[in-house]
Image (tube, rainbow, N blue to C red; front, top):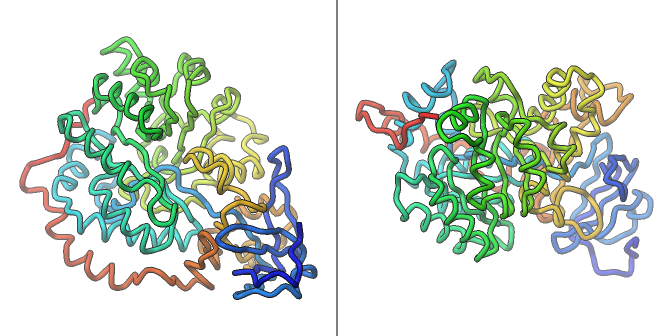
Length: 454
């Protein structure tokens, strides 16, 4: 229903833009010369610019030449790892973990995590990311940053079996303590690291706790083919089959990466008792020279949503979901040998509704429609690299860049306007982080938080 001028003022009206919309079959479309009316953090109406012209509003944004999209969602990252960006380059996976990343992470303090998360959130806001799923350590600090900066997040405190039962208990305590925090913008998950670092007993206990407390599970699984081959050789089952036999697949679960998902895993995932989704971060797979990528088409065929992700900046070098969207389309074309797959509209579907469902927010975000939370980004299409526009979906996926995002809005609150960040002081964060880097990156102590041996 279109609001009338007699109503109390809307909190925000965005007008004169082109709005990405979904029809009742979830097909992507575009409403031209449109306006979005926002009240109490929710989209009240998507109408025309003319119909919204006389509506009262506390704040207005006129956005000619801009496209309004649902805020992008980074479905799997380790936000504080921006502090390690560029530290471990051109290395195979095992050396990357054992020689650099896990030794450095043994130095982490809560303050390092907080500063890394703050810088990461600034980067994501500037790239049009309004929500992220994080899986890391000292997550109380990340929750504080999310509350401060205005983003939305699914957060989990990661644990290994080598930490003993205390690790699993801390993950549960964190999830219960922060669930629904930041005015509902924070949701939480249990976060066992992976089947190769968390044993079957801990995985089964995690599944029971998830069921008892109504929590999802977020973990790495079948990250690459080597992990799957090693699991088969050692245990006779794939990592996905481990998740089934321990009950993890009876919970709502978000699986990170999945490039090692085997054909035999597909019926296992199809019969999973909970909502199962996979987060794909193709840039990292290319950097590590993994032979496979997330089998998006096969997962689509069995009804598993695939959300877009970046992983941490230590492996991906950036938190740019815009780039992940373009790479997903291109890598899938190459992997399938079919230029008709994955189309630009399909890529936009993964970036919006599928990503929202992957992080358990499919009923609240992921589209711009009445009743949805007002998580919106405005993308400037006036640059020479986005003109002319013959196919707007293709322009958004393959021509536009994260730097074209002009405005980022979460729950109706403007976090960036005309490229100006409003909730994070980046220079101050960078100065403090740089002072701490020498102690953080020291590896002379010979410690590491875990041994990578799959």
